[in-house]
Structure formats: structure tokens, C-alpha cells
Length: 232
Ligand code: SF4
Image (cartoon, rainbow, N blue to C red; front, side, top):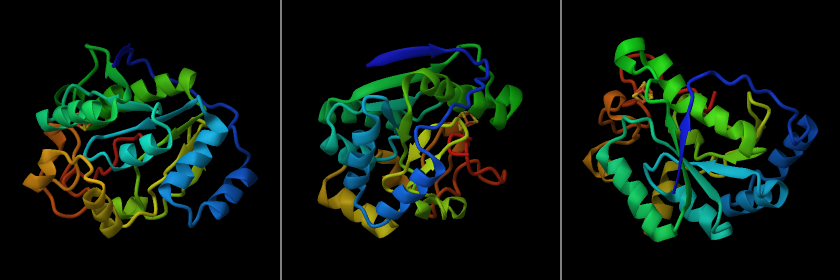
């Protein structure tokens, strides 16, 4: 496990993307009916070893599929300092099961928190900036577990895109429905964060997550916020 202490200084990164807009459009056509494993293989073929994957550890569906394609794929966990014990335990169990090539990114100890400066600044300092900083020097492309079924704001999530950093972003399970997701978990005995059994449909940091039965409604509940900024 690698620990990275990361400054809170914002990263201004916009690089020349590794794919042209035409290539992105072609990839989305070609991969429209591909399986998640086929999408990950496509990404590995083009971007390895400068390819990483983020994981929230609400479950290990994407990890399960991706490590089946490439056992050494680098998995990034953003340790905000505010995770539930159940989430940290899921990380531990995943390390045991998959022998993950795990990189843990942590904010500066002096990073602002939600009580001092609000949730926007807290997410920026504890999630977005650490990931931006790491991706700036370590990746040309990244995989995320975003699914269109997560939330209406994600309903049009593409399989392949160029993100605001200029990096290629790949969402291998974007098209996976809730039913398909649950079926994969059962069929492959995928690790599931114990909080899901306590009614947490989506799991983030403990100060900002409430039990919910529908998608991401328990995240920053009542605030109008539905994203931390990683996927914007
Ligand atoms: S989800 Fe909440 S506690 Fe976690 S980084 Fe964002 S504002 Fe801070």
C-alpha cells in the first residue's frame, strides 16, 4: 500500500488528450455493447501502464472485473479522513482478496473540513485536489465506477470521454443497470460494504452520508449537492 501526502494547492491541469474527439466518438460507438471487461481491456491496450482506477469501496464490482482483466491495475482510494469504519474494512478485505496494487491518497493534515469551510471546499481539498495532483503526473487515462443508474445527473455518462483535465476517462460499467449490478455481486460473490446491509444505497464520508434506498439521495442530503467534483 502506498501513502501519498498531498498538498491542498489547486492543480491547474489541462493537457493534450491522448485521444482526438473523433477517436472518442468512435470508441463510444465501438464499445456501446461491449462488456465491462472488454471496455477495460480496450483501455489497457491503449494506455497501460499510465492507466489508473478509482474506487469508493461501496462494493468491489469494478475491482472484481478489472483485476480479472489485469491483476496489477493500480487502484486509487481517496482517504478523506472521514470514511466510515465499514469502508476502511472493505478496503482491508479487498486487499486480502485481490492483492490490490493500491495507492492511497490523503489530503494535507491542514486541509479544510466541512465544518470550517463547507462541503465544497472540503471535497475540493480532500478528494478533488489530491486526485488531480496524482493524475497530473501518473496517468493518461483513468477508470471510474460511474453508472448511469446512479443518479439522474449521470444518466448520460459516456463509456469514454475527455475530462476537464484533458485525460481520457473510461466508465466501464456506465451502462450496467441496478439489476445487472446486483446480479454481478451475487454471481461473483463480490465484496459489499457492510453499510449497504444497513440501508445505505450510496456510501461516502460519514458526515455527508445518510441511509437511503434510492441512488445517491443520501449523499449531502437536503443540500442540493449530489457530486463531490471528481466526475464533473
Ligand atoms: S463528502 Fe463530506 S466529509 Fe467527505 S470530503 Fe466531501 S464534504 Fe468533506
